Image 1 (cartoon, rainbow over the protein chains, first blue to last red):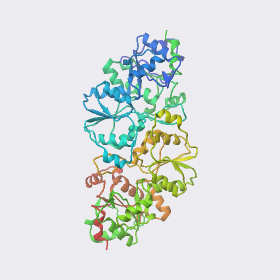
Image 2: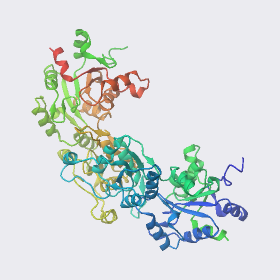
Image 3: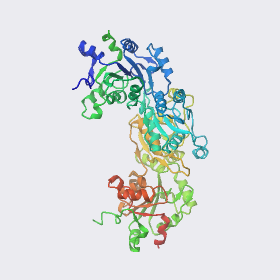
Image 4: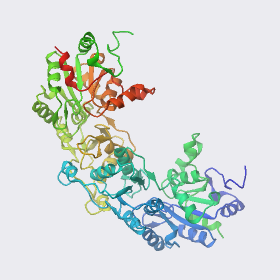
Length: 315
Length: 315
């Protein structure tokens, strides 16, 4: 194994804090950049997870560059900064990589000059505006009298050059129709924020994730979107281009194997699972034992019960 | 080839009316039951297709049993009868096999006693009522103030024992949430009317088909529905059980290869494509030349420009 070209820690679902102290120190010295998921790692909805802020702040003090990466497309970066600061995280706007921001930056990087039809939250149109791109579509848009009338009254906006689909509580049949109709022009770009199938919630309910909206639109349009969120690699390309990054000296921290850990595996990062969110110990153990490569790709190098457990080993 | 166990005409995209007269006569004598699709074969939206009524009526006079089979879940059977009669088709209620009717009969056949959550048109709840099954869900149901409030106010109906998804111009994020939440109980049945991805329309637009709604709900619920419409074989099982049917003496007529012809192939029917609807001559020719079995399954035995072309060969 060529140590220059591969990451230092290639473990398989190893309990980090049960390792000898020198291994933990080696681990802490093995990365310069940290990508951390937010919900399930740093906080649970509005509640901070004990010790996470101290660990993130200490990582920063140790000179690590920390990015907060989130598939949540319903907030602008300033909102994430506010939320993080309220929970005592040291955090600047440029530390936040959210999918609404990424989608806007992606279009900007393509030299996009037209208007966007957005199926998504207000944050998407706001992030687009911040890079100088106009958009329509945000907010309620349902059948008024009948869909027949909607069809008759619809006037396609000739300036639309892209459709972005994100999380949208106002998602409707009418929005799906408009998005698919715009996408029937092959020159219109198709961007999706993320493919999560379900969103966490504090009830015993199933809350559909953005992936359900994107799969509906892409089935109608018969086209594949470009996804900017985890586990797609665009997020890593973006950080690499904007800030520089050595994948093998990068650590990805997450609570969700099929987004966070998979992104890390695909990009050659070291990967750390925390058990304070979605993925359980049992699921991760089962995957470790699987012989299928697609299951193995979801196995993190190391795991912790919660991020705060690292604090005792950081000084 | 054992003539007793296979259908008589195993051709491959053959122009029927270009065959010798005795072959056409043999063909006409080779089936007792006809399943015909409606839109694209008998009419185009509200316009009858020339000669179709005469052919269907003559088939009936010749003693053939004709079923009008349609994936359209937005009409009750009485509505279809009215529409067909207005265009001079001889047609009784029991000749109509529509997906709203099929979905209701499917639940009834399971001895279903509970209530249904419907994502679909009023016709679905009406067909359910006609077999004595109560339902909720039809009509507009969108976020009022915020989805957060929707979540807080939602009270799951404990009597729901099935979710049926059909075509629904009022489809919304809220409906997807409710359907997926009901389906998180594995005892709740999950029925879909049909998987068509797009619906025909007279504009240059993309009108999402029921398949887009079903794929959104099934992605959120992480469950597979039981589909009653074409090309799934349930429709054939239903006719077989209710009326009796010899597959090899059954003819399927349709304008859409991936629903009508595929159903016929799967069930061992003879298959006839008419070029008056969705599938074009070019598409069908390309499929005929393909070596993939999934493409071959979409190739009809015979084709006609339009159903009416058969009239000259029927007496």
